[in-house]
Amino acid sequence: MIEVKDLTKEFSSGGGVVTAVNDVNFTVEDGSFASIVGTSGSGKSTLLSLLGGLDRPSSGQVRVNDQSISSGSDRDLIEYRRTKIGFVFQSFNLIPNLSAIDNVMLPMEFAGVPKADRRIRATELLDQVGLSGDKQNRRPTRLSGGEQQRVAIARALGNRPAVILADEPTGNLDSKTGRVIFELLRKLSRDGSTTVIVVTHDDGLASRTDVTFRMEDGHLEKA
Image (cartoon, rainbow, N blue to C red; front, top):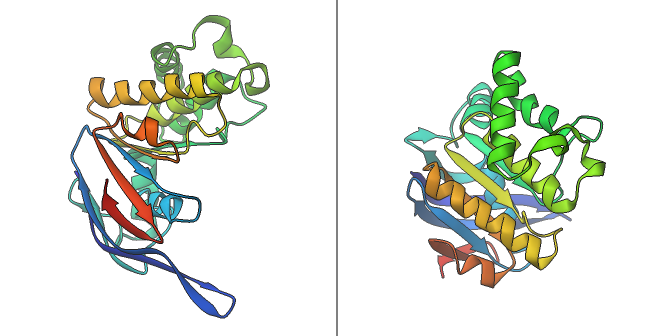
């Protein structure tokens, strides 16, 4: 379970203070597919960074499966990001000179998984997300946007994370491909008991998640 209590994040800007996340409280049950919607600048991506341990809050708490993310050491946060969280980004963030399968294997290498096991799992994950055959050996530039996002999702699953955080994962895709990717994430939460939280600007897609939160000016409420 993800539990967020009184979470606030402030930034200094032009001599003043901007409150990007303002006293946010919510919970997401294990295996749920949740979405966060809101306009650009509402604080969605900042909130996702706090959930993923990429940034620390100014105040408040984030707990994932009873582990405090907010008060952990730098070493704890590195371990948390490496083993408990999978990230999927709008821009895919694939390494261009590596093949699809090598991109998926890379986080497992950092986690110390033996090479033979990495390749077997990467192949299985790419098959699972619908990228098979020769395409697994292609570099990102030889894959479509939807195929690149499939690789990114497979990579996020490499170390069997409890939570996947996806920041506008359909933002660079056409509407049809975006729906396919969204359904793939939904299926992952159903089949693997993985908790998935998606930031999206698309209310239509968000309406298909188990729970939807709306963010505005740093405040979050259940939609």
